[in-house]
Length: 179
Image (cartoon, rainbow, N blue to C red; front, side):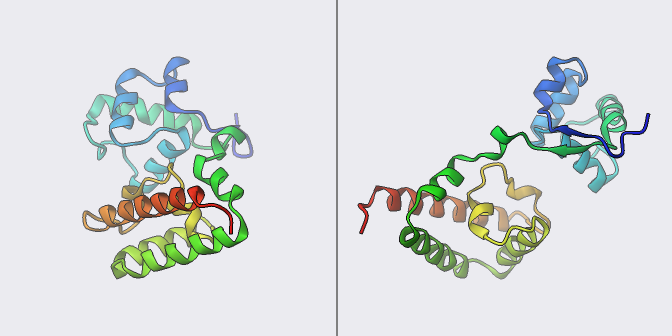
């Protein structure tokens, strides 16, 4: 069977476990490494060329995860519409133009306060994801900063602080009356 052109909705690893495709041990290894979707598992192998580097992954779990990888590596994954929606993306859509501009200006100020490395990580991710607005990347709860290229032990807390500041500012902005 040739699946190279087949697409499928990106299942969660919990769904694979429920359908007896992924063993429990493999599921636990992935959750410990914050891998929750099949596409993330495939991407992880494509980046590292092995699963043994994942936290708590032994030879047995590596073999199980390799079997799942081999089975699904040729598929193209698409997110289902309900998974694409994010709480804060809905909040952003409901903002007036004036408040959206105010939020974008404040985020730019937050970014200016960050280290050069953290700024570079953000801009590299924006380029890779072809996402022109950093705001969407910052507020997307599904973006795990530790998985970003060049994000190290000093950069990750800085990026998480940026997300918290932005979220707090967005909530304050939503509570303000329209001008």
